[in-house]
Amino acid sequence: MRPIEHSVGVLVFDGMKMLDLSGPAEVFSEANRYGAHYRLTLVSVGGSAVSSSIGVRVPVDADATDAPAFDTLLVVGGDEVPRGPVDADLAAAARTLASRAGRVASICTGAFVLGAAGLLDGRRATTHWQHTELLARRCPTARVEPDALFVRDGSLYTSAGVTAGIDLALALVEQEHGPDLTRSVARSLVVYMQRAGGQSQFSASLRGPVPQTPVLRQIQDAVQADPTADHSLQALAARVRVSPRHLTRMFRTELDTTPMRYVELIRFDMAKALLDAGHNATEAAARSGFPSYESLRRAFARHLGISPTKYRRRFGTTGPGVAVSEGLSAIR
Image (cartoon, rainbow, N blue to C red; front, side):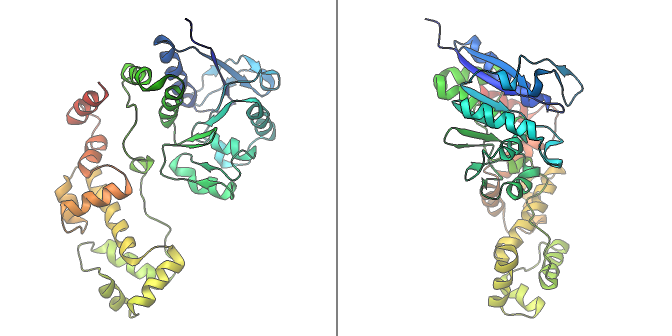
């Protein structure tokens, strides 16, 4: 028996990120080879073809106002979307299409379109790691999760940057067709069915905002200048001539963290940079002030959900080697 057709509407616009469209589209197309029946329909405001981020014109199938109800609505993102107010007609189209869809999903900065349409109010959501803070400001009632690859809140889905749209599409396929078919799709596309860790592993830094209080800036400078020195709570308090209790209160008030967590975050960023530069995990631990590889491993598990060794394999080189063989064997 032919499987029941599942209609997927994709709301596109000028300047859209091409991979936001092509990544999920390939997942659905590949799923059809294994027995699914997804039908994609591209819609835009006015029904006109749109220009993509790589300059390719993309024809569409229908005007958003005339489009039928979809089982799934996908809203793609684009580099310009977070930089200013979302076009009112685009937001209205998303709101109208979403009201008739079985489930709604955004790819990358498409979350800003959903936010402008009021669809993130009171909901959990995510977007590209570079824009999570901005999304939280634009949508103050939304609960933005900065490290998630994708977030589900009922029938609403939002995904992180660009290729996370593939992760999300695989999750949507698994809902309809289970893990076996989805695993076949992932293997065929040579992607992980579920990637380890969150999107922080792809971000430039986990460091929080720069302290405004001179005392806290002094501590930040001291740790960055010599991460291997004694930066215990007592040593930090003595350095800036305040009590440990008062220093802890200052960190809580301004940065919503503790002195020790802040020191670990600076050391973690340094270790991450050392791994990026080609140092092994043991060297990175020693040079960034961690007492042992094991303590660095625990920090990586807390912040990224993967080990320092796996991080280095993923981001140390694009050449052939351990990372490639490890990745392919995991996918198979």
